Length: 410
Image 1 (tube, rainbow, N blue to C red):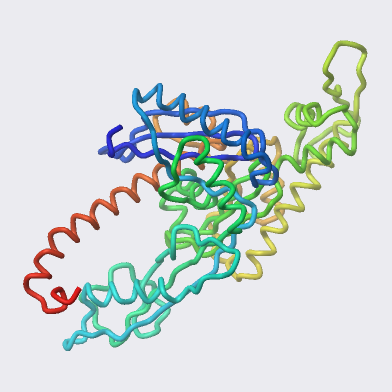
Image 2: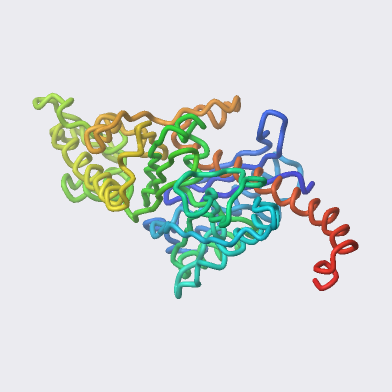
């Protein structure tokens, strides 16, 4: 298989999906797309590795059939429910005699930022340290391109994203058992944002929430970079379990059908006198339940989850920066009335992700596919950056070693 092809796999609580593509003039070209129901995941964690590996193997083989070649590795979307994002910063003196920032200063501050994050026992750092923007002389102005600017000190702000080491290892092992080595990782909260948000919304300030089956991931953006992010081990499965306890339909599967067929998140929009038929496995008279009671159970769980996200944002002091409102992704974004509930919780306008990639298989279910599409875009971009760095190191590094004594010592 050509090295130009990039693949991404997302192992969610309810489905496993793989997308493969390559760089194109217009951005990313989709070459393969495969999905399979997931079993063996609980709250975003691997509970039964063999079942998870089987789902990964299925989507890999289907994608290989579409591509006509073998896939050996993939970027992986981290949808675990224990993700923390912490701000980090570093600063170095500007070394040039003329007091202007040069490429070497940039290299040193990026290295200092990476070194500023110490290893935390039991945690795996996703994607290293994310560099966001530069600062000059301790100022608050966000600088994107500092080279040739005058300063005595060059600073950099970033973000360190981590998750539970054991949970991550189990996920990587299961994906490996399905035939794919992991070559890159993407946090689902960032992937959903990459797929669902416009550059203008990221500039204005926006919150992207990915409502998954076992987890809820989110990321807040301002001036085109993330300012906060996180994940909770709560999702649509918890709504299903609440309905199972409240109405006892007979099985988790029937409770899930009650949620998808009759559930709403906006209680006040439901007629108090309305009743809905309880889903059942076989024929018979069945029974009905109050439509508003169903909505109350759905709304209560979703409201609790959303308020946990809001509390985290309030603690970080970033709510005032989210002038662009909220954008929803994930399967939970398709719940009727959820936009109204989100608007009420956050006091901001809310919309549901809509993709316009030009690929019908992706665009027909924008909320559900925003994460995998965003992850594919990020993986392709990562491949481009890596290729550029290798080319830069190959040519510039060669001449540096010839003409500089520092190069001779390296």
